Image (cartoon, rainbow, N blue to C red):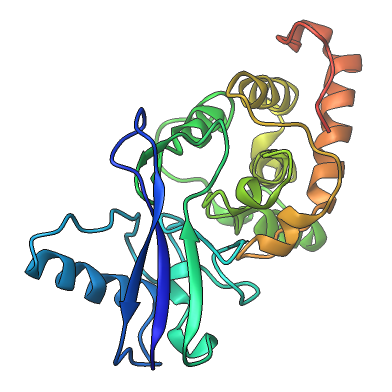
Amino acid sequence: MRVTLHVWRQPGPELAGVFVRYDMTDVSPDMSFLEMLDVLNQQLLARQDDPIAFDHDCREGICGACGMVINGRPHGPRRATTTCQLHMRSFPDGAELWIEPWRARAFPVIKDLVVDRGAFDRIIQAGGFITARTGSAPEANSLLVPKADADLAMDAAACIGCGACVAACPNASAMLFVAAKVSHLGLLPQGQPERAARVVGMVAQMDAEGFGACSNHGECMAACPKEISIDFIARLNRDYLKAVVSHPSSVVRGDGGSNG
């Protein structure tokens, strides 16, 4: 199959970027999208051109490292699919594809399709931990967890932190990511001691990183490759308000409210 690519090329964070056209022929429909970019990079290197920089790691839809906007949609046209698991058979022969990085103030471009997603790491560091005693692992059944809570916690923990929710949101909000990380610990007994401080700290760090406010467009859930529900955003807001009312000393933000 043939495809025409318009790829965002940006040499560095302080330099201007531009779309560059590449015409590709003999593309196998069984290639993944990233494998197709690998072939293009081999061609660029063969003619001593600078290869396209893009993020990748496991290429199994698990790590969350890959991420690019394809024809205006984070991760491409297939629902619940990461870029690395997107295959070229998802596009018609002769398709014209526009490929660009996640675009958000909190995700500055490093080069080409690579952005700095360190803001997510700092949000996790602001509160994504539990108190755990040292020593041997406790008996698995010593803490009973209702099945409904366990299932919800696992649904939230499915978030791979890829940032598609931010790229899809018209406000570049990180509320779905933060809600998933807050909820999967907040639903479990092990997460209760720091529950109030955790939600306040993570929301404060999210705001400090420059993410936008959530206005309930729902694009985040539609773009999420793990289909994290926006119901978790409502849970985050409830936890935040409860923390403000019940534990005012844990409030570290100046304005005293969440951006949900």
